[in-house]
Image (cartoon, rainbow, N blue to C red; front, side):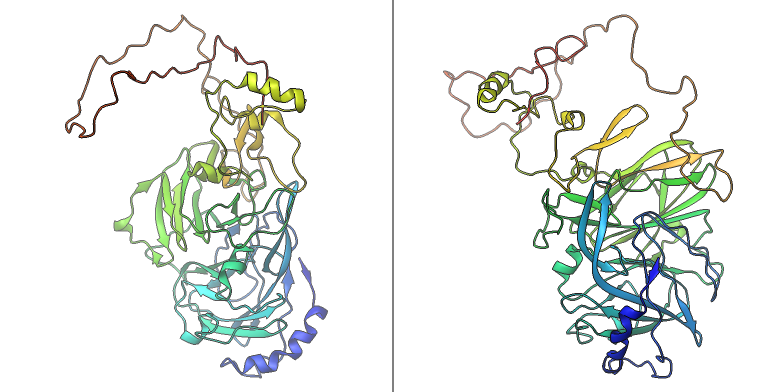
Length: 484
C-alpha cells in the first residue's frame, strides 16, 4: 500500500464547494484522511481493527480492506475513483477504472452502529457518484447522481456520512454512467459486522468475500468494451480469472463463511465440491435459522449478495466455481461452428497446402485447446488452462479451489500445496476383464400425443445417424491435432 498525500492537495482545495452538498460540519472536515492505495493483486491478510469497536475481519480474495481513521467518534474512509492497471491473471493486464489503485476497490469494514464518513475523490475523466448498495441511510446519501445528489465532477471530492444500521454484506458502485463505469470495474464490498453477539450470526474461523464481475476485452487489447451486455469473455472474481484467483485455505474443522456479491449482468450458480452449505445471509440481512436448508449450489442473481457457511470437515482440494460452463472459460469466442464428430481431415490436408501450419480443432471436443498451447495474441489468456497434480485442469474464469487441511497450523493459512490423497482413495483405471456388451432397454414409454404434421415422405426414408467413436485406446483415425 502506498499513500499519495501530495496528489490530493488540489482535491482538498476543491473540497469546500463539495462540502456544501452534505451535512458534515467544516470543523470535522478540517483535513482529508490520507488516501491509502494498493497496487498488488494478491490477497492481503485481514486488517485487524486498530481502534473502534472490535470485530473479526474478513479476508477479501485477491483484494484488501481500506484502513480508516477515527475523528471525534466517526470512522472516516477516503475512496479515490481513478483509472487503474489490474492484472487479471499472470500474462494479462487490463486498463480498468476502480478505487484506490485497484478494481474492485477496497473492502470497507465497519461495525453495526458505527457512524461512518466516506470521502470520495473523483480522479476519473468523467463525473461519478457512489451508491451504497443495500444500506439503510438518508436519501441524500444514496449516491444516485441527478436524483439524490449532483454528480461528483472530475477533480472534486464529496462526502457521504451515515450510520451503519444493520449487520450484513453489502456492495458499493457508481450510480452515474453505470454501464461504462461498472463495465470498467468500479465496485467494492462493504461488510457491517454485528455489534456483539447476534442471534442469527455465528462466529466463524474463516470469513472470505469477493465480487463477481465480468469484462469483454478483445485478445491483444487491454481496455474492456463497456457496450457489451451478455457476451463477456472474461468472468472474474474480484477482477481476477483462473488461474489468477487465489485458493481458499482452511483447517479441517473450521467453520467457514464465504460472502459473494454479483455485479455482472447475469446470474451465477456458485457450486462447492465436497461439502454442503447453508445460505445464512443476503443483502437483506441474516437468514433466520428456521429458513435455512442445505445446498451445494446457490444461484446469485444480478445485484444480489449471498452469504454461505459450512463446516470444512472433508480434507482435500475441492473445486469451487460458477456452474455456467462458459463462465469457467477465458477469452472464448462466440458463434464458432460446431465440428464435434465431423471428419474434416481431408479438408485440413487441402488447406495445409496453402497454409502449412493450419490445424483443425473441435473435432474431438475442446480439450485440445488446453493441450496444444497455440501461440496467443499479446495480452490475453488461454480459453482453458491450469495444471493440477494430475494434469491439465482445463478451466478459466470463475474457478478456484478450497483447500482443507488437517495439519494447517493455527494462524498459518498459507498455501499448503496439493493434497496428498490417502492410498486407495483415488479413482483409477479399470484393468480387469473386458467389459461385457452393454445391456439396452428394449422398449419403454410411448408418445401420448401423436403429431399432427405429416410424416416425412416415405421415399426419403428415416434419417440414419451414426456416431463416430475413437478406435482402440487411443485416438485412432486422427493423424494428430488439427485446428482452424
